[in-house]
Amino acid sequence: MRTIFVTGGAGFIGSAFIHLILETTTDVEIVDFDALTYAGNPENLKGLDPARHRFVKGDICDKAAVLDALPDGAEAVFNFAAESHVDRSISSAGEFVLTNVLGTQVLLDAARAKKVKRFVQISTDEVMGSLPDDSNLYFTELSPLKPNSPYAASKAAAEHFVRAARETFGLDTVITRCGNNYGPRQFPEKLIPLMIANAMNDEPLPVYGDGRNVRDWIYVEDHARAIWLACERGRAGEIYNIGARNEQYNIDVVKTILDILGKPHSLIKFVADRLGHDRRYAIEADKTENELGWRPLTSWEDGLRRTIDWYRENQAWVDHIRNGAYRDYYRKMYGELS
Ligand code: NAD
Ligand code: TYD
Image 1 (tube, rainbow, N blue to C red):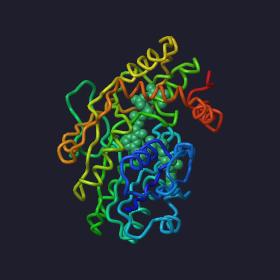
Image 2: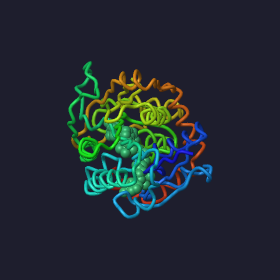
Image 3: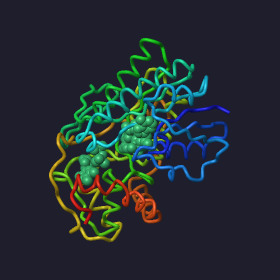
Image 4: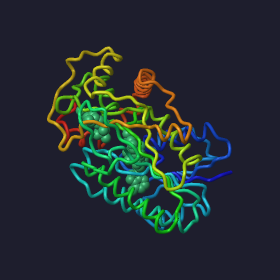
């Protein structure tokens, strides 16, 4: 058995990654280290084989807890743990600096101390800032880092510490930078699940600004598979951009969700724009496709339908979140839920 250490495994992408690895390999066991913040949800880990998945509750900023949980000579660390929502980073950046920057450094130190074979940092295209509207420019691995939100700045800072661990100490590192993910189990503060949840409840769908911001969407399982291949086949010290060549205007995403759910476009409500709102993200994934032999397998149409079906079938999962601290968050961000 090869042991991997996954942080943030109770969140959206981390849990998708764990489900995928346990389903598609037979020789990998996982230590899943997660602080269970508002975004971490034990329900995301239901049904996993306990012989191959061990959950440890802990904070990646807590050096002693990390050293205690991280097995000696582990095959790899996959660092998914993060504060991940741009709007929250605009309201309060402190937690982003702690978890995303300090937490990453704690993990890098622990990986060296425990002689981990490879450190995989899950980063984001947002570190590269914003592309001009309707241009034929794309993010590549050589694009300069120009983060615009506190979230993106913290993820860019984390990348610098990963690079420094490689250059200074020779730690074997790989960085992946993916675009916007969607799929089952995404916390409904993010665009797609928020719009699905509101539409299912006949509540207004708050679209920021003119709705013409562009995001490059990828189904979460395709991202998870690329991360695994980056670890298995990627070159040490390299960065791999991950994207499915699927640029969409926000307003079109929202209208498509309403159409699939059979709800009226009159539910759309244009609201004040996000501060510093990045206009367009678009990823060129040639390096990842060529070097790792990866391709996205899920089309936008299938992925969105599967995602909507999941939220329809898991109304209890959504209600559980919407009945908790989320209500206060939503009220502060948008006013009342209905
Ligand atoms: P998420 O917010 O759904 O989950 C984050 C997880 O990290 C939660 O389970 C939470 O409990 C855990 N966590 C937070 N702080 C922690 C701490 N201090 N110690 C231990 N665990 C902690 O996030 P996500 O959308 O699944 O994103 C996962 C990673 O992927 C992040 O690093 C994010 O930057 C990156 N990413 C996300 C996207 C996207 O579209 N969501 C795109 C590209 C990259
Ligand atoms: P989000 O899911 O927060 O991801 P990110 O900001 O990391 O790209 O937002 C995706 C896009 O949707 C972004 O342009 C902001 C926009 N958006 C809205 O218009 N309304 C909303 O309520 C939310 C959460 C996002």
